[in-house]
Length: 214
Image (cartoon, rainbow, N blue to C red):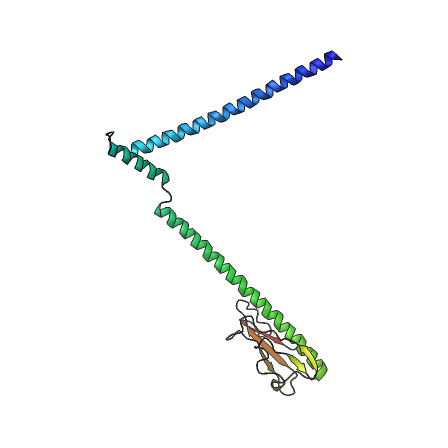
């Protein structure tokens, strides 16, 4: 039993010595790397010093000051004008591409909302006809019921839509319009202008998008 314990302790002692040697080797290797890096830096510094001091070979106070100044400026130098110009150009190009993509995504988002709004208005108009037997005439609706963003579609005490949505831009040609058929109107057309979508709806094709009765 004593022999086994003694063997275990000897093995542990040997392993500790081996681990310590490995740690010392690692430290020695790291010091060697640092020494090599310092040597490289020193060589570069000396090269800069001698390069900037070709015209000042005397060890006078002015020459020493000139060497120090030249070395400091060389070590502190940053980007050149050409490098800065290249970086600024790349940033400008990336910004332009990102802005164009953002604009296209925004336009598609607004076009999708226009389609959704017109479908909701059409659903309300169909409920109106189901109850009233016809679609509303121009006189049945406020003049700005599609442009005020707060308009309502009502008949008597019954409300079919409140509020009626308006175009995301709601200016110029970007406005919803409602055109009923002859009195009593049994047909109608909802229309707006898209920004990038050219499917046209029932208008055919192009940026004008129409929705009619089913």
